[in-house]
Amino acid sequence: MLEKTAESGRTEPSHYADVHLLLRQGDELLMSRRREQPVFPGMWQVPAGLMEDHEPATVAAAREFAEETGAAVDPADLQLVHLMHHVSAYGGARRIAFFFATDRWTGAIGNPEPEKCTGWVWHKTSSLPAPLPPYLAVALQHIADGILYSEFAWPTTDEGPRGTPAGPMADPVSTVTADRPGYDPRL
Image (tube, rainbow, N blue to C red; front, side, top):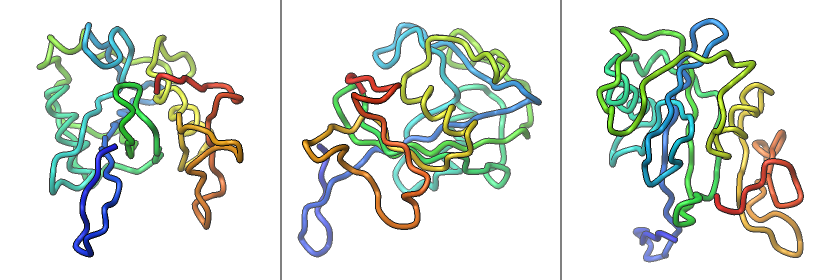
């Protein structure tokens, strides 16, 4: 696990933070199929990527959207629709995933990164394409159900799922584990 040292000298876990943009047009969602990339090859994805140092989440989502589609969104138009704390299938890194939604953009949607994806297509939210990365499929279902926070693919202990939150954000929460639908040990 990545670690950082706090000013107090205490070592704390460090997480990757990634952003996802759900661009909606009526009852459709903009998605692209990943080419043979090291991460989730051949799977459908929304515009997404890692946050950069000293970058707010909404600015990161707008930047990733522009890099991947050639179009633009205003960070002020992005609405947080889900936050997921999950473990990556690739290397087991702990991640905080921000999911933002908007139906406003400017410019033509293109494919400036053809080596990474096949191009952008609108899909009905009632019949999304397959396959999706498992964490994304779970997040999209939570978004449809109005669940703001979830945890995914955390290891379990004899006492039950690890990392279950306490306090005001705990309800509603969905912790997906081996005994629940949607669990994928690779994530």
